[in-house]
Length: 448
Image (tube, rainbow, N blue to C red; front, top):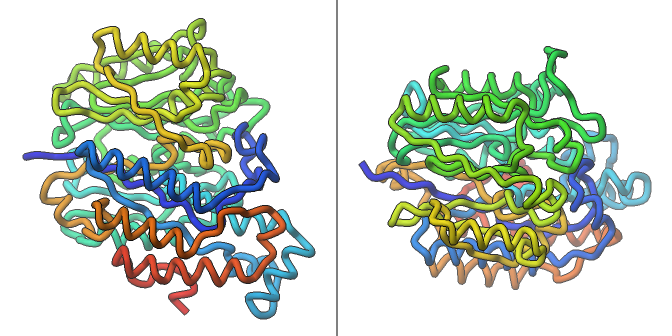
């Protein structure tokens, strides 16, 4: 059976702005109050999707959410017409309005955790939307995310959908940003790698002191149970608390894996050598040969990794068995990082090609290539069951660019979030987008 890893990238929404909402994410807080360009942000993301599609990789699109979320502003006590709700929030609580206007759903690595059918007990692909409980602006995402995923992966013969974990700190879940799967081939049984920042109930585990640890061990265990994963095919590892305090808010800022390869920093995990040994042992048990590429601190510091987003990259398997690493332009601008990448790709190892993309609009808000995509391993039969309208093509690329040109602003500031017209623009755009992508009614304004 032939299988693929499909990447479903988040389409940047019309309210993309720099509100600095994500404490612990250095890039997000550093660019607070800068003017953003939603139109350019969406087009930069589409260019990456199309480029990878043109290289032969399976590529899809995940739709943005309705913003500002008037629904949540009403829950917080603002009343009146939609326009009055927005004006009142802008006057009385602009930070709350900014949180309810965030376009953070663009980072679909946080949309859900996905387990392929080769790993699950019922041999279906399982999806659990992330509750993103650590940040209010992200905690409001999972209901719409779940509806969108069900509209994309609707065939219950092949796909199983779970509700998000309880929205409580003990089960804080950040989705695939803290999850990687290793396998000999995408249709073979694999080893699922869950990375957590802290244990909520067990004080023996160390904790960061400066920034929050967003993913809990308890959440990782719960998802493994929900997805019907075998104990023999899962590995749980803790992030190094000191790297979290250096701005590594998710595991995908310090490591990335694909097939049998883990590309990671020397300071990624607690008890790192033990973690690597367990991955090697369990992958060997299912027919794989684990390859660890560890970047030493003396070559690239944690601070340089965070600044460049070296590890927030994509590893993509080519037909010859080697891999492309997809990195943001910032990696080329930082000499130690670019020097390491060039030496690595020329070393004869499995990663032998670099693709660089300009994703500055996303990067300035704290998200690189890996943040923008949700990976879903699919067999040919499962891929055929995916909603075909969400899969990238020349036609869809042209249509979405025209859609962005029609509906998006090219400049947005915090003050603009109080403009009720922005809500009208967003709803008009999304109503059209659901028809383009064949999603049906997935947004609150469509469900009333």
